[in-house]
Length: 295
Image (cartoon, rainbow, N blue to C red; front, side):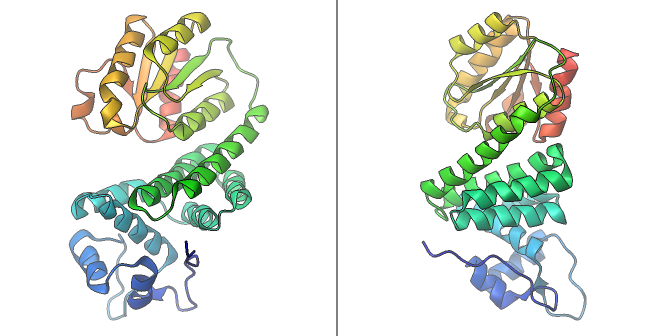
C-alpha cells in the first residue's frame, strides 16, 4: 500500500484546493459542494482570497470522505464530523501524528504521540480528544478500505500497550469494591472500555475489566463474586444489541447500578425503555457518572 505523506501546510498558510483534492482523492467540485452545502470544513473563508486548507481542515475533510465511503448521507456525515472534531489546536496535531504513524506501521511512534499528548493535555483530554478520535478514524479507514486489518490491529495494539503502561502509576484505590466493565456478548472492540477503566483507576476507583464478548452469565457472576455496586456495558454492533440489552436487564435485576455506552445505543430511540444510565460519548463525563454511583 502506498503511504501518502502527512499533510503539511505551506508557508502561506495552507494548501490550495487542487492539492487538497489530490491528497484526499476527492474531486474539486465535491470539495466546493461540501463547503457550500454543509459548511465542511467548518471554518470561515477569508473574502477575496483563494481557498486554502490548513492541516486541521484537511483532517475534517478526511473524516467527511470516509464517513461517506461507509454509506453515510452527506448531511449526516458532516454533522458527525463536527460532533467528532469539536477540536482545534494541539489535539488535532496529535491525531495527525498518530494517523501518520499508523500509515508508516510504526507502533513506537503511535505510543510516543499518545505520551506527548498525555504530558501536554492531561489524561482525560488525551483520551477524549486524541486517543478516541484517532481510533475512530482508523476504524473508518478500515471500513472504507483505506487501510487493511493488519494496520488497524497494529495501531490498536500500540494504543492498548500505551494504556497498559500507565496502569502501574494509578493511585491506590479509595475502595476495595470494583466497578465491573464489559463488552456486550457479541462485541470485540475494547479500547474505549480500557480507556474508561484507566481513567476510573486514576480517580481512585478499582475496576474489573472483563473485556470482549462477555456473556450474561459471566457478567452476572463477576458482579456477584466481586460485590460490585456498578457495572458498565459497551456495545457497538446493532446485530448484537438485543443480547446486550439482555445483559443490561440481568444486571439491573441484581439491584446494581448499570451504565451503558456504544454505537448500538447512540440514538435516543435505541435507548428507550432500557434500564440504567447512558454514558454518552465522552470518557471524562462517563467517569464522573460512574463515580457518583460508587461514592
